[in-house]
Amino acid sequence: MKIVFTSAIVALGALLSCAQKSPKTEKSISNMNTAAFTGKTETATFGTGCFWCTEAIFKELDGVISATSGYSGGKVSNPTYKDVCTGQTGHAECIQVVYDPAKISYDELLEVFWQVHDPTTLNRQGADVGTQYRSAIFYHNDEQKQKAEKYKTELDKSGAFSNPIVTEITKFDKFYSAEDYHQDYYANNKDSNPYCSMVIRPKLDKFEKVFKKKLKH
Image (cartoon, rainbow, N blue to C red; front, side):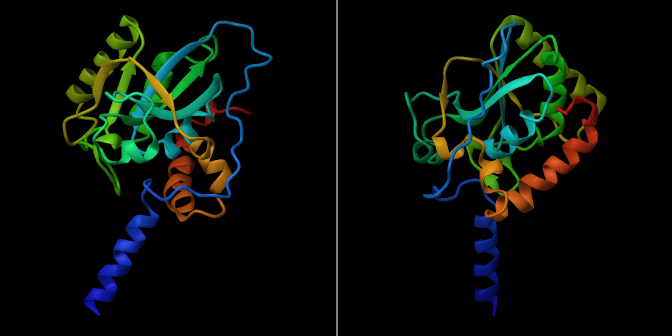
């Protein structure tokens, strides 16, 4: 009975992990809708563990024009999902957010960033374990760097978390978009993948309650 029970736990863990086999029948929905936008945009790049969760959350924010899943912070050019999952490329799963600063500020994006994942667990978010799931902020300019570092310092001093924050704050270098099937993953798979219903949906429910006033209508 122990063997059967252990096997069931391992199987459940696999279902609730971001690192799953690539689906063959999914259709990708475009997550970029900038055709009618002609104003100024800015870019932010965050890693909060599995990018399926991060993308689903950030694209609900009013002022966010696009949220693209991809890889950043590594040493290998044009990595694939399979490459990144080995933990050998140095990349983190992350999202690149293009946003309208007239509607949402970088400070507000940081507020969401700190609240939608656990920034105190090193190279891990829930069942997702590995350097590719690390908490990370890839800043695009000195202002973003200063704000990220200040926010991190103040959170540590305030005791907001029971453990020290281990979030990496690193200068942005390159971002590689993930494969098409990773884009809009939750929207495409919320009715078919247990990870969507048991991991992403609860995170979205909590996020929507906390940030109700900041969501798109």
